[in-house]
Length: 186
Image (cartoon, rainbow, N blue to C red; front, side, top):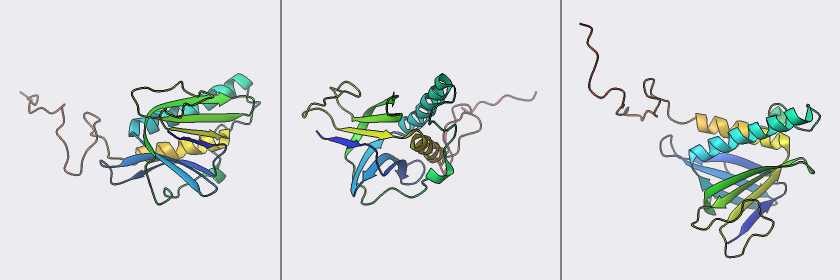
């Protein structure tokens, strides 16, 4: 399978297609007219964004603030544009790896195709018969901007039920906390 490498991409974003409750989540990298779009789950987008922020916060802490890592996403890097079209799925993501390259001060993100036989994350050599891999190397500022957008997209889903926290559909939902039994006032 192919290795899609972007070092750095012109654009790297998380995005969705569809209505809340039926959305498909994507990671999309593009550079010089080349676009790679991979499908993943909502929780994977959320975890990736959280882990990126945690990684960058740790780099800031360890360097005592003497690095190029911004504490927050720079406003100039905000990307609210939709995903690039045509949107074609290159593969479905199984595993995601995240690393800090201290030498180049870059965040390395690798999304690996869902497979029975995953390869070593962030390996130098990827076997030609192995799963598809999207590998992106971005600046700390671009990583903060990616994380901020990803969290906003995740948050635009269905509102949670005030009782159980599960997502509400347009028609409501069957709440496990309200199983037909109510406490009487007597």
